[in-house]
Image 1 (cartoon, one colour):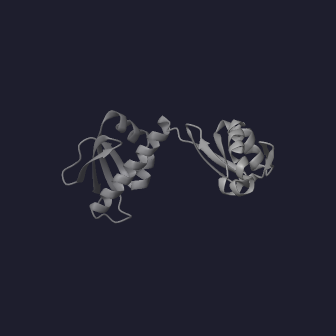
Image 2 (cartoon, one colour):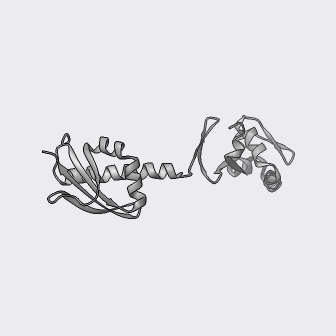
Image 3 (tube, rainbow, N blue to C red):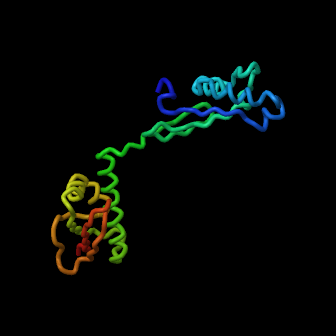
Length: 181
């Protein structure tokens, strides 16, 4: 972004241990005047290594403490003059991908529980609510590739398949796996 003020805001405070020794009785006026300044302008000066005039004195960058506050919807980190922000919004597409990854994890756990070898090809059945079933259908190729499933079947499993009732994203689901002979 051109202006990091769109993704972060700052709280500026005097560095009391440094300023108390240096300015003593002027500290109250410094605190008051610093609080009245535009935090973004003060932060820019501090990050650029420039002094800031407050209550008639020039404060060095290390005499001002910056607290970075994330803007809602973003998580940020700042270091060495750079700020990085990522959105924390979970889009429907991202939620669906997360659910598909969770399905893969559950099927992999079932493979281990059933005692399958890592290279065993399997058939996988599932019974899920329509929303989760739609996710499984949309990510079928991914799920099959990750779990070595040659078939991913919606419906009742065959007799003898390793079966487990689980929950994915709060939705009940039944998975069953069977090694292919």
